[in-house]
Length: 171
Image 1 (spheres, rainbow, N blue to C red):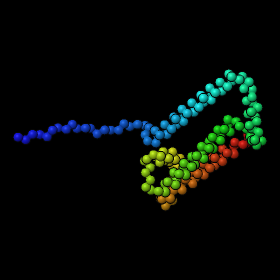
Image 2 (cartoon, rainbow, N blue to C red; image 1 turned 45 degrees about the horizontal axis):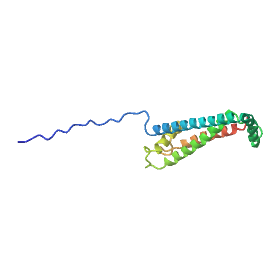
Image 3 (tube, helix red, strand yellow; image 1 turned 180 degrees about the horizontal axis):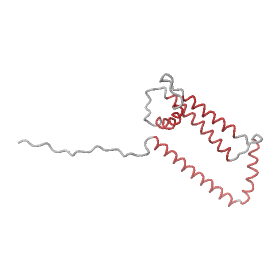
Image 4 (tube, helix red, strand yellow; image 1 turned 30 degrees about the horizontal axis):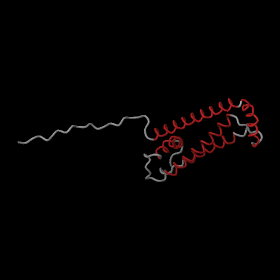
């Protein structure tokens, strides 16, 4: 007698859940949330320290003014530390960092066998390509191979950085 082979259950192929946060976007979100959490904790620590200091020594608040103006003594005349200058300094520093990341992206684009789908390269690509695509739409590649649009991208970043650096000391 011939018997039928034992039946094996059919497994349907697993379909990965589509997540709006994948790969580098999830990594950037995690880094941003960690930085935000650390900022909140640091702010609370400073706030608690200030409240403890003021409760122990009520005259501590009256010494803050002279110390602040003494710290401004080394600055050139006409320089103010206003919220606008602080924002300009922060943006200028951010543009410097972004220019460095953009330089890494452009240099790595010279190597054709780089695995752009792996971290941290996919994060660099996701950070830089939207900005570079703005200029790729303006300047087409020369001979269909040489992309000179990053030159204009660096020129714009450099101009913005110099404007921000010069605006800090004008008030």
